[in-house]
Length: 116
Image 1 (tube, rainbow, N blue to C red):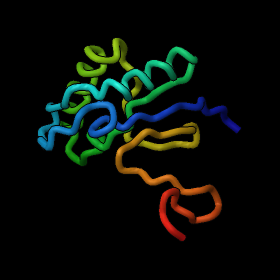
Image 2: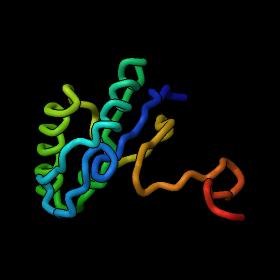
Image 3: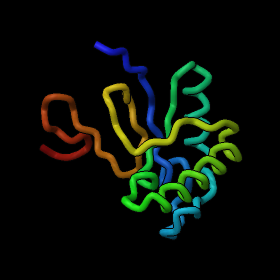
C-alpha cells in the first residue's frame, strides 16, 4: 500500500477569507484573522495544510487558471507562504475547516448539533 501524507484542509471563501458574494474567479475577500492564526498554528506544529476550494474545480480551465493565480497571490500575501491548493478530498485528509460542512459522528449517521 502506498503511503499518503496526512493533511488538514482549509476552505477559502467564508472560512479563511471573508465571503464577498462576488462570483468573479479572481476576487477574494480579506482574511478571517482567527482562521489564519489557526492555520499558522497547524503549520508550526508540523501539519501539512492545503487550501480546499471549489474555485479550482470548474469545468472551464481558464477560470481555474485565473482562480488559482488569485488564490496563490492571496496566500502569499496573507499566509506568508503558498500551500497546496486542491478541490479533491483523499484519504490523507484528516481534518477539514469549512463553513458549509456538518460534522457526523463516525459510523452513526448522527449529525452533531441536531436533535435525533
